[in-house]
Image (cartoon, rainbow, N blue to C red; front, top):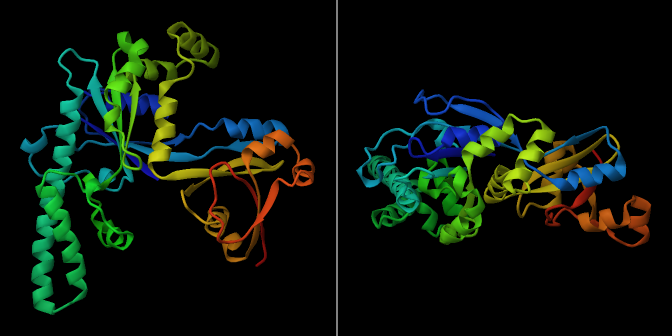
Length: 350
């Protein structure tokens, strides 16, 4: 899964990228460079499980962050142009918003960036409708009709200056449009980038802009990108002391990563054994059989059953014999919907 980092120029996009990814890319150089990194999703459950089974290694879930140029931040006045392909291919956006400079206007910036997405999508939809209408007339291909109907509905929403995220599409309709990679259809994590002197007011800033939050569509986080980037270069002991001095329990960027993972519609199930304790990434709502395929296609194909223990039960009873004796391990079939934090052992035969 890929998260694209966007924002107006000088909003701190690359600073936030560096903080989230532990990188040291140049900031503010207008180089138009594309930065990519795989980011570990913090998960304390893995360390707790590792303390019980003493594995040889721990493997965390990961998501890809991409910092790429593309948005001017000029809203409705922006010229329609070709957005960088890496942003088009992103599954969701992390929108960095300036709240640290003297003349910052977070609400206006958020709206300007959304307006720019709407403009770019509208241009693409109008062009696509024109091309496909001509093709349908020339070929008589009725399969084009359904797609044109859905595109027309999208255009109606965009002409009302609303993002496609607000267009109520059925799953089969979303599938028809998947190849277009519309920008305003992607879930959005708004990151309010505050100044160093505002760190103790982070919660009040969050409350101020909490109306941006809409479950499954938009999330919100507040960080000081400059401080978070400085934390990356510190040793563990220095980092702990620095956070203590600031009165912060843990880096805010960890919450950004966690919220990004959630926004992408992802959850983790866990496996715990002596070779490895690991978090496996699946989409919320996946069945046990589909989840098994994340480990290996043979396990999915030869699926027999899943031996499932809730995470809280696992840490309470600590060993498999004790878990089984307490009746806390369940045998689930292929249609079982996996829950976040399930500790699973798959049985299969191929």
